[in-house]
Amino acid sequence: MATFDEIDVDISVVLGKSLMPVHQLLRMGRGAVIDLDVNEDDDVEIYANNTLIAKGQVVLLGERIGISITEVLTRAPEVRPMRTNGPL
Image 1 (tube, one colour):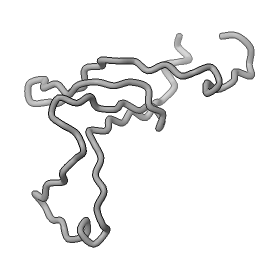
Image 2 (image 1 turned 60 degrees about the vertical axis):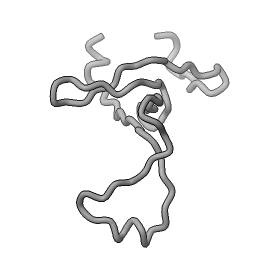
Image 3 (image 1 turned 30 degrees about the horizontal axis):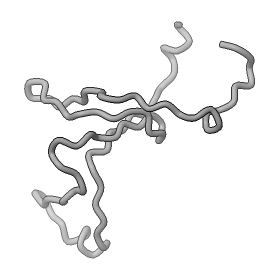
């Protein structure tokens, strides 16, 4: 298990998405609000190294924000990376 302690994973959480012209984005200043395509109770998407791995809900932890995982997504065998070094 010590080997896994050395592996970094980039975790990203997508709250929602929006499409707008670049000129509108460039005109935005501090305090501007971007409307997203989600509702307050919708799940957020959780990515590990740019791969969607789970969905979750935003939770408040005192003055911090966290994510509670509600669903772990599985990938079909045909899209899983092939192992080349034998069994784990």
